Amino acid sequence: MANDFFSNQDRARSKTGRLVALFVLGVLGTMLSFWVIAAAAISISSAEDGQVNWSQGFGDPRLFFVIVGVVSCIVLIGTLYKLSQLSAGGPAIAQMLGGVEIDPSSQSPAEQKVLNIVEEMAIASGLPVPPVYVIDTDGMNAFAAGPDPTRSVIGVTRGLIESLTRDELQGVIAHEYSHIFHGDTRINARTTAAIAGIMLVGTIGWFTFRFIGPQLMRGSRGSKKNDGAAIGIALVVAGLLIWLIGSLGVLVGRMIQAGISRQREFLADASAVQYTRNPDGIANALRKLRDGHRTEVPAAAASELNHFFFCSSLSTIFATHPPLDERIARIVAMGAQNMDSTRAASTITAPAPPPMPQGAAGFAASFASAGTLSPASIAAAHNWQERIDPGLRAGLRTAAGARAVVYAITRRSDSAKAVDALVAERDGESLPTYQAVAAAVQALNPSTRMGLVDLAAPALIAMGGDAYRAFRATLALAMRVDGAVDVYEWALSKALERQVERRLDPARRNATSSFARCTADAQLVLGIIALECHASGTANEAFATACRCVGLQAGALPTSTQRTLDALNGAVENLATIPYTDRARVLEACAMAAAHDGTVTSNEFVLTRAIADALDVPLPREFAVG
Image (cartoon, rainbow, N blue to C red; front, side, top):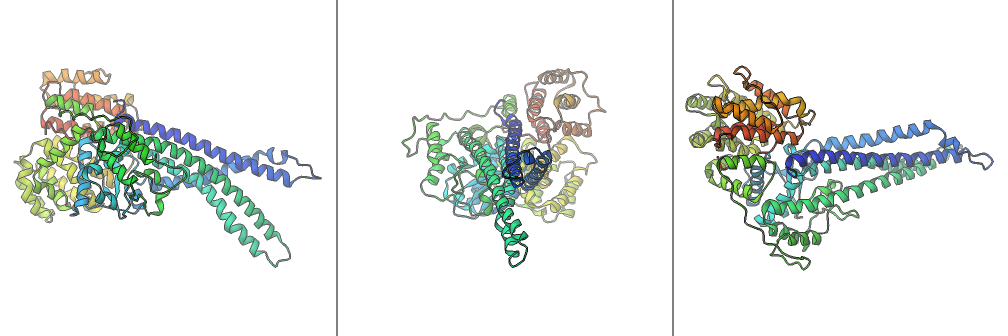
């Protein structure tokens, strides 16, 4: 998995570290400049008989440490303030840009078109379905924002979704998904915060130069002592110098930002072609932008967040995006044919997407390709959605309908009447839809039923925290009407946690541990999967094979007292703190444990998908099984 979601997320963290190093060098350069100017000014001002004693300023270490301390505080305050804004999640950034979340039940054909495309890509990749925001402007642009996939959003302008065809819009959305996959949204947020910290230094200098110094000069007029005027002049000069040095630091930061952003845009364009196998889609979208359509976004924050967009939202000396002609030419060389471009060196006909593998092979392939997009997976997601009853799909677009479907997922033949009564008593608003869809949902196989949670998530998120918590309390009662919570109901809880609850309560889940510290947890998870998916004799073999996959000694299978949902929950909570690439290894081992006998049932997939949800990693719904 050299270029998949897992390695890209870990790589994004390492690139963030390199950006921090560049940022520190920039701040040190700013500090050094201030120290040189201040030391020179002190030395010159203390000159006697025309002789400058340079040691007066440069030889005083206290001056250096004072400047280091003051500049550090200013930069830190500016950086942390901006970081707190951007780390609030994609919705906060979308709102800064004037975006309004699209209601999942919207009747607008253009809004439904973009929602369907985003859903397809989320289901195909295994990522949570992100909220979609629309900026009400005729300009054509799009963006992805958020510190990680769980808190990311997709944003589009009104002009974009109303002017592009479905294929063109799919190409643009695939481009934005690439930014999420490759961790670019995290890098974008960090560079913006770093530049904001240095910019604050220049802002203070400008304010001193433009307002504080002149005010002191004006206030001292008419007084016998002209100390105020002298101080005012000194502050004007000092403010000007501070502003110039701060502006130089911002200039260097913008250059670094532009260089990084341009390369990421080329990668995202290429990824969009890879994901959709339709280079004409994104190429024609870029052509429309090149041939006169406006891309400006009127929000004040568009300037500092310009590198978040699909193409530049304003004219700037440091372009954060490559020229449109160059982007189009590269895509034409990848195979776009219906283009009017003379810059293409050649054209390549894209091969037809391969069919989705079936059965156990398809199950193993879905793990091997976790966190990726392909034409086959997108087509499978589209076909899977199309097979769902239209009335059921329509119900999933509303909050009451989404709740009704989730209640129906918990309904079993032996507890149906109790769940029916509970919904009637506690959630009358969803009752009509629940009664209409309960039998249809119950008739679906377990894997398909659980997949409906992905489609219900946007409407559940739109309810807000308080309403969702009330629904969750009712759902918890529905799960316990038979006196216990089983593996299937635990899987439903994990799906809701990842798809909904981490957006409503976006606390960060950092990789703070290592696989070496969580080997016992990995053994427990693999042992439980082996025992749940196989008879006792085969379970030992499956467990041993899975443990070898991650370099562990198998040992004994978990006993019945160790094999509890509480123990499983604790183990996956610990494993969710290891790096993404190690989580990928654990998931591959889970696949080997479940598919050891060459067959995979829907129940077995539901369990392993629940492990993936608990680890907060993407795994597509198993269309071949479901």
